[in-house]
Every structure is written in C-alpha cells, then in structure tokens.
Length: 209
Image (tube, rainbow, N blue to C red; front, side):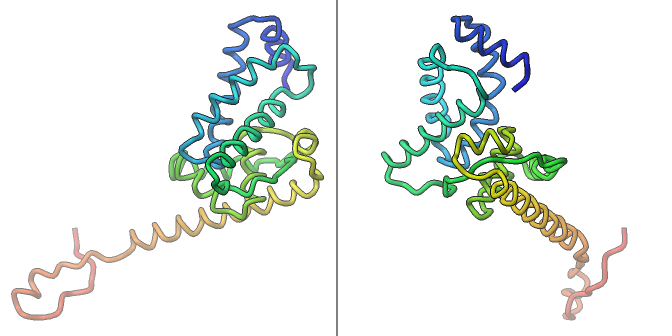
C-alpha cells in the first residue's frame, strides 16, 4: 500500500470523513468489479454491506494491507450473501494470492477496451474458477502474492501459476474473438438482385465500390 494510502487510513481511523471518502474512491471501482464476478447483479448490495462493516470496524484496524483487509470483508460478505440466497458463486471462491505479473494487466485492459467492462468481466468469469479469481484479484484489486496469500491461506506460487494460466487463456480468447471478427469482415458482399431478375444463382464475387 502506498504511503499516501497509509496516511488516509490513519486519518480515517481517527474519524476524518474526507479520508474515508478517499479510501472509498480508491477501492470501490475494483471492489465492485470483483464482487460482480462473485455475486453478479447483487454486487452493489454486497459492496454496501462491505463498506458498512469497514466503517464500523476501521477504528480497530491494526494496520497492514488495507486493501487486503477490505477485500477479505467483501469476500466474506459475498459468501454470506450466496448462502442466504442458496446460490453457487459465479466463481468457485477459493482463490488466493497473486503475484507480480509484469505487464499482465495489459490483457485485461485489452479485454475492457475491445468489449467494455461488463463483457470483459463475463469473459474473465468464464475462465476456470481459480484462474478467474486469481486474475481478478491480481489485475483488478492489485494485491501482491504474499498479501493475498495471507488473506486466503494459499501459497503464492499456486496463485501465481493460476493467474498466469488465466491470463494466457484470456489472451487466446481475445485472439479468437479478433480472428472471428476479421473473418466476418472478409465475407464478400453478394449482390443478388441482377441474378434474381435473370432467374440465376447469385454471384459470389464482391461488389465493386
């Protein structure tokens, strides 16, 4: 966590409302995307429950990685929500630490740019569950392997591998999507009107102009 964020956490613990709003603005976008993959359309409700607990428990926060602490609360609230709804999670929730994946966020950014955030999240959620959550925690929340390991109780190496595999799989899916789009663009336009008038099969060559 950056020094600035540390300072904001300390100020928020002392009751500084502006500092708490800073923490909210810093974490909420990624937290909401992460929860969307876990609970779908109920993500905003679960995020609200999360921030209520964060606000309540922040004075007793003893330090460490604030994002990891908040994400742990969010994940627990998501599991409680799914149990109440008697639903399976969108992802099979056990995922853990994430590693230093140099440049890997580019794949997720590429997905978001080409499809939009909602469709990109859906594509990530289609990955095998452990890979999907590893990708989300690493690239959306931004935790490192050691911190995520402490939160989720798994070895950093296992999640590092899951995240790399998930990002490679996501890159292949994006390449397949791009190839399919290019193939559609290459389909020749067929002008059937002259042939229909003559009672002949339509021409298959592209129409000029």
